[in-house]
Length: 408
Ligand code: GLA
Image (cartoon, rainbow, N blue to C red; front, side, top):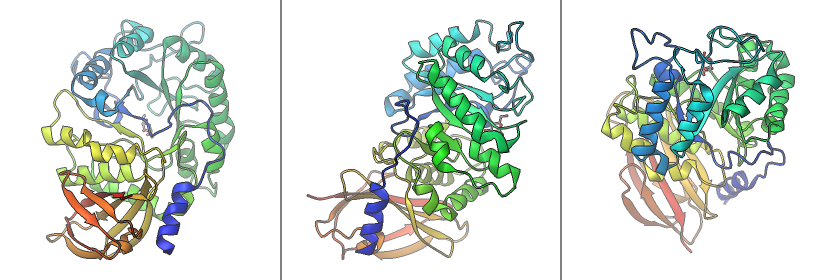
């Protein structure tokens, strides 16, 4: 019973304060340049892979054409390195003219014409992480500029700034964005800046949630499963704290989804996708939609995993236990009483971990019983009652994930 109560409570905790811009009622979904295309500005030698309007337009085309938009992916986002080296004579930000010959308004119009939204990147400090002009001293002007261009999301980084000032600077930018009257989703790196300071700053997540729609709070993800494991580990360690602040309007951002990349096996990629869904994390992919492997595309479009991520409760899963590298995570979803359950195996040896569990030990304690579906194949596992047994095997570096809908 206690288990059921904990899970119910974590699903019902209501968050009093959140950014009141009506956005991110469920975690944002989209695409971002950073991990895959990084800061490649060399369009002369590498025209198809450099940060340019052409790249963004091509990704928007694929998002609209290939089923991503229908699945919920909405924001096409530029990260660092879109800017010219200097502001213009009026101090206004300007894109690099060679790489963005038609300007940002044109690009936003194009993305909007595909039924999608355009995201952009700036930095709270004097420079962006890659050394382009930052927003410090210009936040109001920059917010107005983004609104004039038709920008729909701002990722606001924390390089070249004093992270002790994040608690003033990030809310200020939030206010300026709201003053534009354009709905701009605000994606902050405020807690990550405080983490990097390595001082004893305890991030005030309540304040972060009041100003931001999503917030990065850990190191950059890289296309490598050790990186994914360290993020899952960090979220596990801070599970009880983080759960309090995740919900409609504001979500923790463990960074981009690298499904379709080079560095992880298919099983590792699906483990990342599944855990991000369990966290109610933004599903912002960074990959090349022009040449994505079929099984990666299928995973990105998996309707079961997306439904868990986009569940209207917006709860972060509870980590129930960890034993010999195997973790059990459980997330309340709608209709009330239903659950998503994921076993995450951080071991990378052997032929997997076999398990026989009693359903109630996994959180399925309601006598009405559950209709259970395995998410990757969509296999119907039938009905489980609290005393039913579930026999599974969790592959190394993989997850086993099920959706358990309460029976009425
Ligand atoms: C930081 C951020 C990354 C990316 C780069 C860009 O490292 O955390 O997500 O935006 O800067 O330079």
